[in-house]
Length: 169
Image (tube, rainbow, N blue to C red):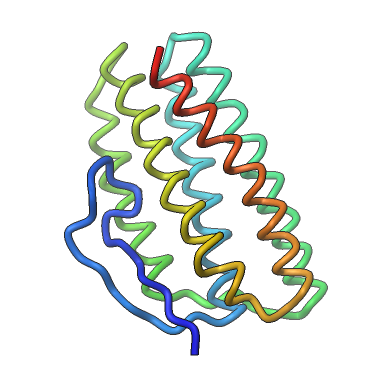
């Protein structure tokens, strides 16, 4: 049986304080992947509403566009496979942490916002990429789901590298 370790602070900027184990199924994997993508779309929209930095704006536009496109592909796939994504403790923890991060970032302005947003994107993509490569892809039973996750992983690795480069400036 495959197990996934979910860091309670998956979207936090520092290490997580706790971990939770849960069995993972294709329906849960689909929900986790979709949730992570949707949360990054929302984070990108928040950045677009707050930033005045052209590079941060371009990065946020990329996050919104790319994550929305992958989520559209995921919805089409689960529809074709007649799979209903299943809410689970992992996706709930991601959503809860994202809400806290959104609130924290909402109180920041200018360069402080930009720096915190980019740092969060580095941490977010690192966590999601590790979960994809270490657990979600190996645990996926459906070949089409696995292929979509693998395609997403390549794209999200590029996102992580872009965020790291942006943060180093």
